[in-house]
Amino acid sequence: MPEMKKYKKTFLNLSSFDNEEKMVNPMEQELLEDLLEFSRQTYHSSVFYEQIVTILKRHPLFSDKKIALWYVSSQNAVHFIEEKKINKNLKQHLTQIVTYTNEWYFLKTQTSQVLINEEKKIQLDVYLEKTPHCILGLSIWFSAAEGINQLATPFFKNLFSLISLLLMKTYYSELLQQLIEQQKKTYETLLHKQTLYDELTHLPNRFYGYNHLEQALINVQKNSKYLAVLFLDLDEFKQVNDSLGHGTGDLLLKIIAKRLASLMNKKNTLIRLGGDEFMIITEQFTDKSWPLHLAKKCQKVCLKPLKVNSHELFISSSIGIAIYPEHGIDVNTLMRHADAAMYQSKMRGKNNCTVFTNTIHETSIDNMRLKVELHQVLDKVELHQVLDKDELAIYYQPIITIQDDSVFAIEALLRWQSNTFGLVMPDQIIPMAEDTGLIVPLGYWILKKVCSHIKKWQKLTTKFIKIAVNISIVQLKQYDFVEQVSAILKANKVAPESLIFEITESAFIDDSSFILSQLKRLNQIKIDCSLDDFGMGYSSLSYLRSYPFKILKIDKSFIQKIDINEADRCLVHTMINMSKNLNLSVIAEGIENIQQFELLKQMNCDMVQGWYFSKALHSKEIIKYLNNNKDQKK
Image 1 (tube, rainbow, N blue to C red):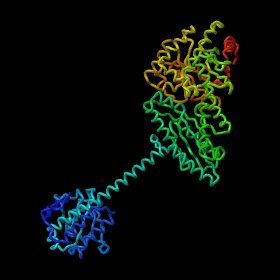
Image 2: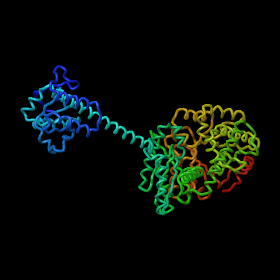
Image 3: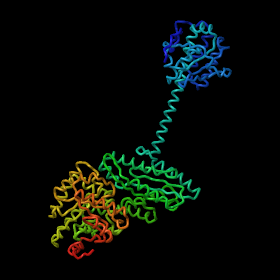
Image 4: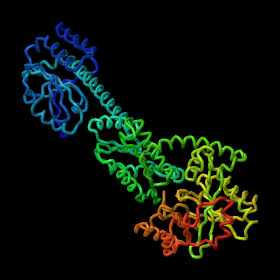
């Protein structure tokens, strides 16, 4: 602000009347008392300004004068609250600045002003460009001579004091109201966002999704087009949180959310339901194959490599689809059926997509019953009760050495002969056991059963039998896991070298010293570890050289099409070569025909496993197979 000269001013105490100078004019006294009484009341600004002008007009000095209440904004504009007869171009007629403050820099506060001088108005405008403050004022048109003479009287001192206080009272009252309204709008916006949007990913949340689906159903009913609900769940996300921590899990979710959002358009809406579950509403389409096409695109972007906190991860997803009107005509039914279809995808393995059918609906109900029955069976296991009719049993599938067709090992596979549902496979049993919290006692029961079989078979055959046992990450995290394993081996007089522990790769994304020490301790007692289901879930090349295991097992999903798909062949060949360079033996699982076997043989794969060689056999049948192994022709 340019330096301003000080002008002759009449100073006034803005907070109180000047008691030293007495009022002698009753009319002036009455006017001030009216203003004082008026100051105790609260009016809307428009009423307030009109009343002040009306009160001032009672005084003969002002009866023939132009009076205006005004304010100057920081946008360098003068705004008037005036009598109807006042000229609208008052700004250019302001002629003199007279201020009633103790400092020239009155502009830093709000106060009253009278008669603006054009020269000083320019200085005022310059200052206003640099200040955010709003200046309130009172303008009364006097001649230059009478203005200066009148302004020195006690009446004018007190008049302008009162006017100043009234102006400030109204200004701050309205300013406070504006701030309250602004804060209210801010809170309403925040509340709206928190109510309808997910805080982590900033995607619409379940509440928004439910309401949006309701409206979308109304719209689609008008034009006889289709609508679909897709439920997407990340495979084994829980293991990421458990192993790498919730911070890493949150970053992963944000990346996946961004990738999925890139596929959306005006007819597709992405919602985060919670945890690692997402919902996609796609509407106004005519081709029923579209939702499945969209689902495949979603799975494809999820499968792209991720780098989160120095961990290179691969993540797959399971998707369920329900289509309006075929699978439901209301929100609850469509969401429930999409969820059931998604669960069915998970039961089929990783990276699957399923469209709802009535069979799935029945299956979802059966799964609830199955969990209840499994819990009852596992309760018996935990209580060491005898299981009726071999409800839980161990079957064994051979792992064959490619070069000489000999049996390298046999894999122990759990079977449950449910009294209600018949034979239940491991891909159903294990997830339910983990959900019910009984995977640890079940795991120890399997290990005890395997060791008892080894002890029995040692008397029936001279062959050294090596058995691969699947170990859950939950078991591996038990602090006394290695001690429990050692105790079971000792009780059955079984050599540790007889066991191979197969652990899914999701267990190895945790770089904690505890997990690493568990694996080293298993190696120290001469139990080999195998990396199971390689290529699915959260593959990370870093742990291939960081953890002490000796075998890598390629997931069957990569093997199933190597005889007809060039890309799968190249991928499997790359995995085998990489493993060889890391001094890891390789097992390929899921061999179903001779073409697959011959290709793997050409790729220099070490071992193979699958129905082409043998289905999983009951413990009573496996010894016969082992003894006759040399007679098995490929």
